[in-house]
Length: 125
Image 1: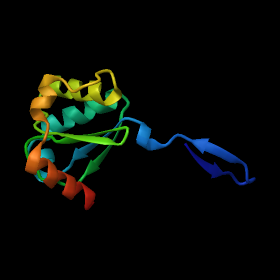
Image 2 (image 1 turned 90 degrees about the vertical axis):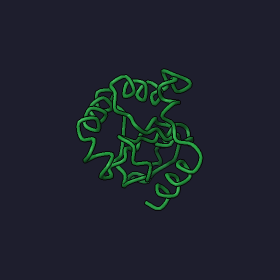
Image 3 (image 1 turned 180 degrees about the horizontal axis):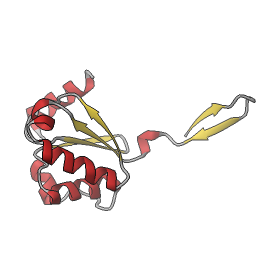
Image 4 (image 1 turned 60 degrees about the vertical axis):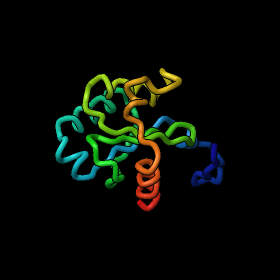
């Protein structure tokens, strides 16, 4: 929690957004433009679940819609999110219904050099 002052000088607290489930969606050419229908379906699934998300520049994985989950300060990258089931799994994991990513998501998780590249690109935005 962090405090803020109103016009009268009273301090009130606000929840810190780091604790809220959040997603970052790649808005690069290959993720957004070339996979437009999958990207729009993913965006709609996220909106239907009332999750907050932001569009970010290319993160370099370039394999279908790519998303980053931001839960409690931990980030996980998932690529190739084209199917509705993958969309539902991502939302379920992001809101905390699932403690671990599903097998479907784990197969799409970035690791190694691809993840490090995505981390660097995201950090530079």
